[in-house]
Length: 302
Length: 237
Image (tube, rainbow over all chains, first blue to last red; front, side, top):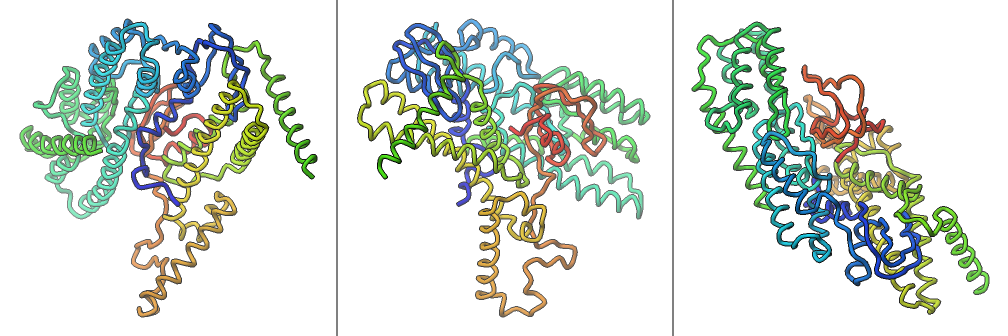
């Protein structure tokens, strides 16, 4: 009996939450209990008012029976969440490192089971968490424009956030990779038989990776990297490569860094004399919109 | 007969208690990081890896045996405590934790095995043709793959293959450059997290190179990062 289809290639949110329940949290017991030997550790003996660390699932069980208070982690205080929100909003090109890996799940679990143990009113914390989540989701979506068939970097993304984009990213990257494979095969044949300048131009339409589309730009840095990339494409191969690497490296977008192989390898290919912006942008805009629509469907559909 | 059994269980529990108390003096104030919590963490990782990896990973005989043994021990603890009848309020609460945890561990084990069955169902033909794949399965998994192969073959023969020309009856044909046998695609991308800095760069095979620094999260093809997953530099997430 294999796992059900909805769990193939991804985790369901309940499973991500289940994993987060294994992480430790500090509690203040209200009553004494002897230590309990478990398979994955030992719950230490409890004495009233004496802080101990236990897995969250243990804390939640105890809390449900009013046998303990949960000490919320530091990052979950109103003050720290405000700092985090500001940090997230200040840099739209990467995720802040202020939050732990399982922040979404742990936040939910503690808000759900121990709202009275928070130092601020629960709705304040809840709103802050939601704001942070929305800012970060916007970044993740914007970052999807940079999808390519090579790799994607998502530093400081949370477990739940990662799982939300998992299906889409996996599917898109695998498809791009297949397309890239066929394309390289076709290119090799074309070059062998008859080098065709026009060919280079056409290729740009295939992939949304080159989404350097003016209308979609939201960050200044993005514009810069676009310009440099375009210039370098017309420059010499070596110079262009280095400029490009430097510029794209220094302008990361939504925590997603991506060095386009295409740009670099393309500079070695024959260039089309009539290489125009309109041509390039028009087609890529379509691609971007398709990707966004597909992503929204994937997210909303679940 | 009865006495003998009771004695054994008492011994068992005494041993367990001794083990717990000697390893963790009661004065201790945290959920201890012992070999036990390490094992549970390994089981969690194993489950995540099997779910996210395109290939079938080697079956974790030792860990599974250990965990299943401990589940059995805990189930005995539950049985003894519920039948002995001296359960006061405190004992009931303790049992609640033991029972909950047993279910949590069973969930992980089940999820792990079912994730493997998914892949065995899909790639059974490749497994049966490939000795390396077979060594990665447990005995019962291999038996399952063989039985599945035989049954499907018999079924297809009966339904339609027997009425086709003999040259078209094979299920593992490779003629015409097309491979009939489905096998894991190691180029599929996986999500990984870097556990500690790795010197040098990883070549992605198409002029792209990346560095692995602690905490980095990447999405990249399984094939290029496989070596680092196997030696524990990075983990699947």
